[in-house]
Length: 277
Image (cartoon, rainbow, N blue to C red; front, side, top):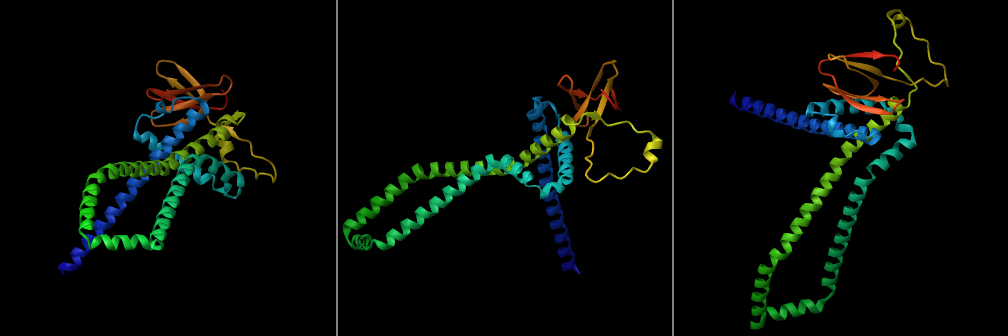
């Protein structure tokens, strides 16, 4: 009875470890996605991305929003332009990865060519065999050993630093793909649902909400609308604009007529959805 219980406990611990590892990785991905979303606001409007979020929780909120947007754009997988935009967005990281792969292929080719030449050069093997059996060969061996010991740090340390640098660059290139994805999702949303629409979302009464919605006619494009709000502070100050992004304690507003973009704190404030600015 003791052995199955121990095995059961080990299995439960292992499952818990895997769950925590996956959860930690998911949190990192969401944070990087949220950072990319914040960068999209700076790329589109010039507002510093660092003022959009105050904590990791804000980045998680923006990252979760990015995941939802990715799910909503799955219908674009059949469009060739979708893949062209992704290729253009990831090209900086892809260029670094291609350069590193080309360097590895070149080094592998040089190593293979060196081994092939050493096998073909029989005179080198004969010279080594002759030196092994003579006193001169022993002296050369000892001298070679000393040179090798003294010269190893001169070659190993730079090579180790180069390997660490290459590994760091590769890791950064891979991780940069996540915020780049968030950046592209955020820019696409801003262009399509913040800047593009001509009107704000109309206010709908209870009777209209209860009515059956008429079917959309084939070939008739849907009208895109933007979410507009007014933020009323307790001091009496009021801010109006189209919602770009929102976190727990702030909202980024865009005013299309004046082109103003501002981050407004929602602490001690009421938010009201409006149908026109």
